[in-house]
Length: 109
Image 1 (cartoon, rainbow, N blue to C red):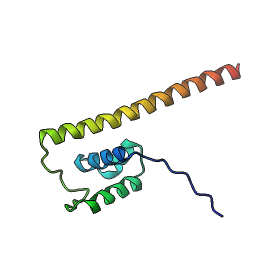
Image 2: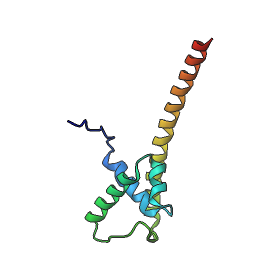
Image 3: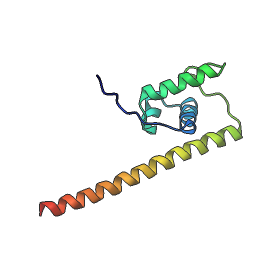
């Protein structure tokens, strides 16, 4: 029997924000996925799911629609939340690596 790989679980808010960011960004989907730390296929699935719920199906390469000030503010706030989360994760990773480097430096003496 094949063991199933455990997958990360993302909140609905993160998924919605990721799709919104992808739709309003001038970057290709692969770049947005890389920036968010998710696979291209994961983001693509979220996008397709969102488009199947939305009657106005837009292609990922279509230019973003004109957005109101409120929509722009909401989009930027979502991006800030995502970036803050990624920054916190990066700082945690940095702290762990710093401790590991110090541990191995002591061990090699």
